[in-house]
Length: 147
Image (cartoon, rainbow, N blue to C red; front, side):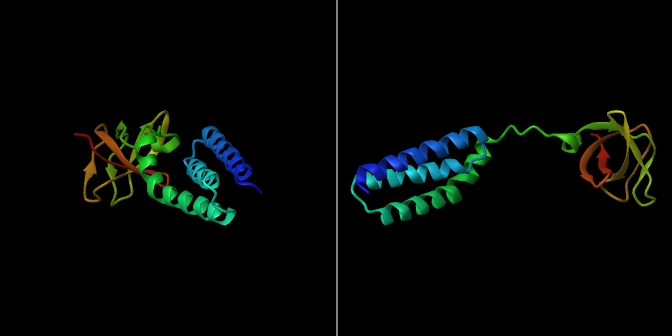
């Protein structure tokens, strides 16, 4: 295999990996596309196939491990909560007294009645008080008094 033909193979691999990344947006294959570009450059300067493969693997792994967490942090900032995660932070009204020690409490959320418990087990929230959902624990909403 000539250096030019291996460079073309690496170029095709980089393009295919970039297209896969664009279709999935998973921030995985783009790092391998970068590795393929580095391997292509190595092929163009005359490195043998083993050097190209080692460069491809090393560069891909290094950028995957080093850059992916930063890219995810800054590129995926606007994650829309779906399903039950969307209730966290919502202001609801206690339908009944919420007393975690007695295991009593209910709130309404989008037409459904949910079991509720207080974030602080010693706290009792009266029916009619406004609460904020702190987290979801199984089928129970953990709430605190709204400020």
